[in-house]
Image (tube, rainbow, N blue to C red; front, side, top):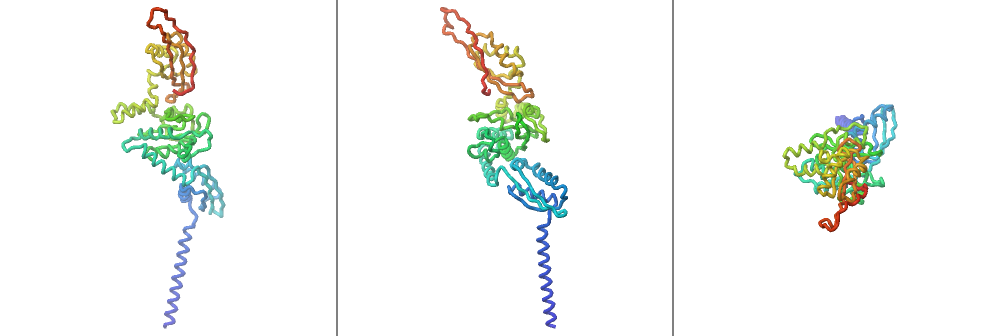
Length: 400
């Protein structure tokens, strides 16, 4: 009886050990089961955000659609995160199949390493604590970020540096992609929805941002608002919150993005008439962006209107005048015609720049400087006064 009992106990122990081993093997086997396409996307998303250089896994799929499946998965990951999309320089993969089990190895190349990404994250947080205050609204935050980037980053004319990390380390130079990535991270961190647009500007590949204020999308091209060569504390606002039509004068894109149809000048005018507590900020923004040139007082359509505006300026003895002219190709000729018979002018010069707030490609802002003749005998009757001969003016290539 004792032998019988001992034998059964041994059998039970052996059976329990066998069951435990089988259960453990089965549980571990589940870990290595091939993934479906959705699980593959989830794993790959985590790997790319972790900046892994290589990643191996297997999934259940159709070997004949590997290229399509992988492309769709990568695009789905990119569609959720513009920052990841434009931080990844390239990727490639190799795949092998046994039946419907596909083993695949990815190799990724990023503009930033994970350590560099962490540096960017920390620096951006520090910068935002310095330039953003809790009482700021989205309009104020956008301008603070725009101005900081223009003042502290330089365009890399060598076209070597492409990342936001390059923008935040000496010599603080990057190309449009780095500007767009940095703006994307900073703006989204302060609660302003932002996207990166990929397209062409002036015949070259280019990226810039879309920003959303009060539910309205605007184009923001900080790269083109930064003067080249870099000028200390010089900030342009030519490409600050434009519509599709306005920026399409020299930008184009193919992919679908949220439409931008609301003129930012109208949005600011509404803010100014609403007795907003930030009305002083909006008034200054209206001036900084050159929105005043959309008014009739600062717009000139032809040589007759130009002559009238300049005559009034000369009578008031103004040394400079800024106006918008709708026909830049005739500007030099029309200025000469307008000033030809005006008294006391010895010389003049002017500069001009494209005006991006309208859809006319021939639309410019010009700044005219006037020098007047001052006679030493102006208050004397001893000598007659003779009007000097007007010296021809010349354009200068500096911005207004």
